[in-house]
Figure: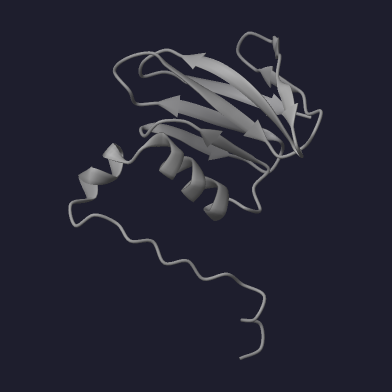
Length: 118
């Protein structure tokens, strides 16, 4: 059993109908994201149907599949992090909470945004 002692094992009870996952509260989804993405430096505190595509060069894409505008948080797991919107070139303002920096964003329906953080 060498090599198996350093991992983590998750059991996630999901609804019988997979579409019901879209109806989980944002707080539940955010906790699942925090736990499952422990080694990834960014996660979204967002409603269902807002997805994160993370890359290994401190860039990521947030894509909204929602039919209406949504406001949510991008959480960078580093105090004092800086976040830049790659399409507009602007730096977003965030606040530090513990060992993370939180950025509140407004996302238009069915669009994506590309970001880079430092």
